[in-house]
Every structure is written in C-alpha cells, then in structure tokens.
Length: 206
Image (cartoon, rainbow, N blue to C red; front, side, top):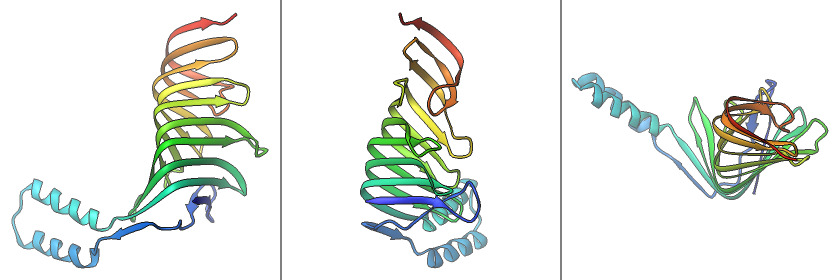
C-alpha cells in the first residue's frame, strides 16, 4: 500500500492523499461535546474533573486510520525526498495535529537533489508528524550513506525544513577514517558534515 505525501499550495508543507482504509473510527463529537460542555457549565467540578472531561472532548474529535504493509513517499516541488515502509501504520488526525505511527521493521530512503538515494535508514518504529513535516525514527536506528558512512543511535529526526538529521541521544558514527561517539547530533543526511555536541571518544582507523 502506497501513501503519497506531496506539496500543498504552501511551499515546504506536505499533505497526504487518502490511503486505502482498513479500519476507521470517528467518535460522535457533535453529540458528546455539547453534553459535556453543558455539564461542566452547570456543575462545580474539581480541576482534575475538568481536565478529564476536556480530554474526553478532545478524544471525541479524533479520527484514526489503520493500514498494513505501508509504503509512504514524501515529495516536494515534484522531487522525491523520503521513502519509508513499515509493517503497520495508524494515522491520528485532529483539527490541530496529524501524525502517523509506523511499526517495524521500518526502512527509509533519503534522496538527494538529483533523485538518487543519498542515505538509507533502519529502525524498529517511526513517527511522521505531518504538520511539522518531520520523521522520527526510534529503537536501534541505523543509517548508511552511499559512501558507506554509518550512524547508530536510539533516536533520530529528519526535518523537511532544514533537510538535516538530528538527535539529542547518544550516537556513534563510523567512517572509513575514524569512529566517533557522543551525545547530541546535528548533521547533513549524507553524514558529510556533522557536529556532535558532547563527544566522548574517537578512534582512528588505519
């Protein structure tokens, strides 16, 4: 199943075509929300009770869509940016937020300006934040570039706005010349230029 994320009329913003739906649930917000709001107005409630009711109202406005054997393509200006595939995905949509959680194993390709595969990544799960146009990879994250540079971490984020990958966690980078580890990472998607905020060790490879 292929989900395609393409530009909308606003540049740098990705939208999604409606995927084939295997299971969809929409709670009746038009019925539940007015009843709860009326109850809150007519009854003295504790702060905790108000928070619980507000949470119920927010949940009633939530739409979920489930898909299996998912393939997603994110494009910008007609150019491929990200391809990702996973075993299972669930999409959450509210008026203010849209995100897709993808269960793995997850496989990702990042494309360069010519449309060639610049880097590949693997993880156990991923999240696509559609409003922010960001992919987050979690658990046993591994990145390999076309010139065999490698990165290992437990968390990694790719941003469409900056076209960079970042992580606040511990990372290890291995190149043909050396290996370096540390906490806090910011770099280009091909690992040709990067910064580790708190480096902890470096090993030169002969």
